[in-house]
Length: 242
Ligand SMILES: [Zn+2]
Image 1 (cartoon, rainbow, N blue to C red):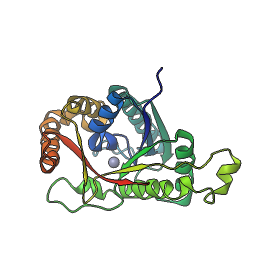
Image 2 (image 1 turned 180 degrees about the vertical axis):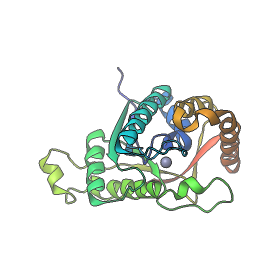
Image 3 (image 1 turned 90 degrees about the vertical axis):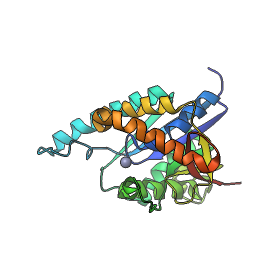
């Protein structure tokens, strides 16, 4: 194993969020030699079929197990090295201090240079924006950013983590998915197929829809790239932490 040229951490609410928002970018970074770790905040138990009548804890447990397997399969397609599941209740994720502390512990352990997460601010666009209003997405974004700055790099935040041996770590770059004012585009022309294959791994969520998702995702990538002069892109609000 050669040393990675850098480490990136992707924090999201649900399995498949990263595949929709940043999988082309992740595949490109992995090809460049980056080591990538995913963190999925919720247990994804609310992602069962809309027509379900059994929503018991046992039924939810089946959904959780299936969606974790799908996320692992998507990670394998992209070359993502690790995926960490936090198992917070799906649908009611909150940006609590406990979640912030958990993320700080992970940041200090993984020690990434780049953090990718969901925008804590919803966007108001004419099409396809509803997913960005999912309260879990906003909560995951809020918690992920709060854990990055200042908590991860500040020894005075969560002093108990020092006692556990987790030394402060400064993350240098933040990439927000679904942000209102993207200022950074990643060319995914060479990795769009990989993104679509990773998305298709979430069989329970997109299995029957891939034939319509393929042209839609391709069009999204084209539309996103257009202002940046790219044929296919994923766009972010990128902020540096110098
Ligand atoms: Zn989601």
